[in-house]
Amino acid sequence: MMSDAADRLSEVQAKIADSATRAQRRADDICLIAVSKTHDAVAIRPLIAAGQRHFGENRVQEAAAKWPELRGEAPNVTLHLIGRLQSNKADEAVALFDAIHSVDRSSLVQALAKASEKAGRQPQLFVQVNIGDEEQKGGCKVADLPALLAEAKDAGLIISGLMAIPPADIEPAPFFALLDELAERNGLAGRSIGMSGDYETAVMLGATHVRVGTALFGVRDVANG
Ligand SMILES: *Cc1c(COP(=O)(O)O)cnc(C)c1O
Image: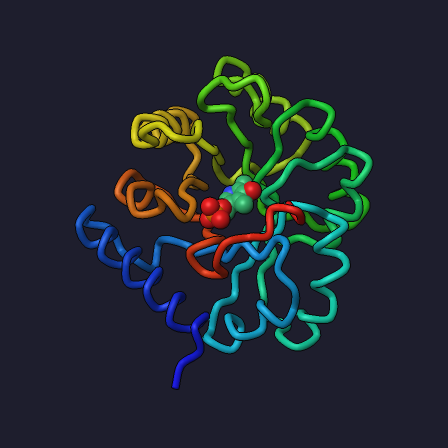
């Protein structure tokens, strides 16, 4: 008998495959990131056992507490940082994560360039765009994107793509389409878009990475973030 987690994983994978087919894309070109923030090792292990290998966390401290042990059990896990990163945690983030989706400002570009040089490795990097121009959200302004990408390049960083979180409670498709357009215009292949409520739409609109938490793990305890 399959565990609940394995059932949910199969369901999400099937929906990604269906959306990819409808959009005449290959399902293999879409990376499913299981967002495990707030969930402990006991909740994460069944997904690893079911074959899931990409996981996302939004806090460096939380990931540092959970993942070294889990990685000992599953060395081929790929860990993605999807939350805001303070520049003074760049060294720790570069050591811990294989990908960082939240590069959004000059000071962080400089800190990541320094940390990557020191470490002799650079995680895969995405620039987060504040696609709905929302005051409270992270991400660089759409208008500032070309300058930030140029700065990253000058600093020796390779940027793989763009990430965005569209405004809540309104139709996300136009924002996904805008992110796709911005990525295209800047010659970037990666599009990190789509969460539990809208990953099928995101796949239809070019997502290369979808970040899915609730649909895989169930509802998070809000007290823990
Ligand atoms: C929590 C989080 C997700 C996952 O959200 P769900 O709605 O639970 O799928 C995706 N992206 C980011 C940046 C997040 O912080």
